[in-house]
Length: 571
Image 1 (tube, rainbow, N blue to C red):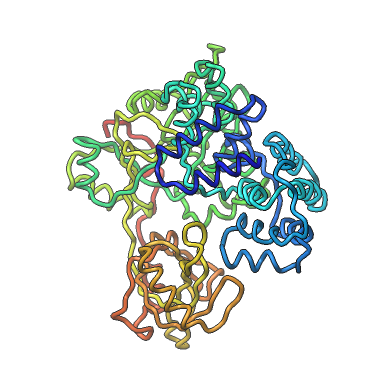
Image 2: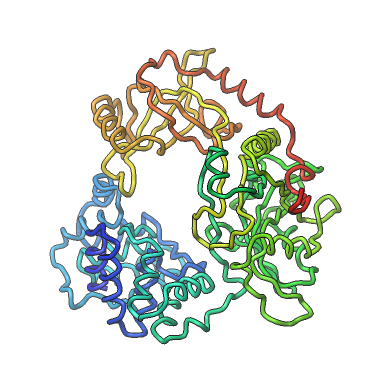
């Protein structure tokens, strides 16, 4: 692990992709078979393979106890170091450098030993046992190695290493075609296995496996209809962008599983969908969206939230917030009677995948089932696309998914075969009341802004949200200096600041919420711009927020017949 940590530091120190690839390739080809898998997992920033749903469950308190005990420093030392860097790995390294005696590099645990320790931590019961395993690992690790062990364990590697670069390095290390490496990695969901297959010249044996979730295809953002048609035209397929939860459904025989966007099994949270898929006559994989749905109406996302975080929701919650699965893509298929493994359809054009999807005879919600098909319409002009967008918004959906009908399915990729057309519902002027130290590349600046509107009845400022995106690095740096000079109180990483900076905040949806003093929350808030021309006395009021909320509630309901049932590709 010592040599792996040296490599990670060198990769982080260069911005040249060619140099990163060369460093990685030279390192990977030197590894023994039993260490190659772990090295690849760790370089991907994970303690286990991506398709492996295990989590170590090691919390901050346990990490802090172990690190400060090893370094023989006060209990708050790790928190203070973290406040300086906003990087837990660096904070651990800083504290462990205070250890009275440092272990020599040659005693550093091997990659296989670290991987085994991660597995033991995951399997251990309780923080005391987990902490004991973690302690034995760090006790043998010099500070830099400890830094990267923690970074991998917490999923915060951050060395500027994209997945594509790691795949390119594997291809270069073992002289294999890059496309073959990408295909194998996509099917297996395990970059460690992909590296092993590449080393042994067995990439051709990689196969799609049910109940090993594929990464989801992503869409690039776009707001301008003309730009969208220029990229995807002359004719595009358009679906509503639903206000639900992206999910992948796998079925084989009587076994059905649902996976969330982070590839976790969420089957227990949505038993009606699982039950509704058991009696179908095909095996394969669907891509779609889970929506709260009752009496022919798709409910707002806020209703769906009551189903989240519950492994097995009680009957009362299931009855109050029923859920359907809106299918919009078919990724693999085998007729049950064939008895064969499902065939991947990822490289087939969307036109073919959609035709196959419509042939599955899913039990639709308006006939008592738990499924719907996304409604497809075609658009070939700016006016048509804008009209479809306005109709989607009237149904209270987020916007549109605009797709090239000839596009393949690219798991984990954000290309231009799919575009998401979203526009802010509105903007409101708010005043910043608090700021927080950022993370990652913004660890040294105050980049997370808490903002408020004014309650006209009392004159008080009441919080309505928090945002950390929208401003440039230069603007954030300038505002950091201002906020540091106008801090009223400090609470760890959070600073309460003088309420004088006005920001224009864009958002997609307003929701009722007890989380903020205003009684409302904004979905997907982002800072549109600083408003130095306005004073805190000119920010929007709670009355304005209520008016926007009421206007949204009075909008047309987005029905399954308008937003989820298929009308076919030619609709």
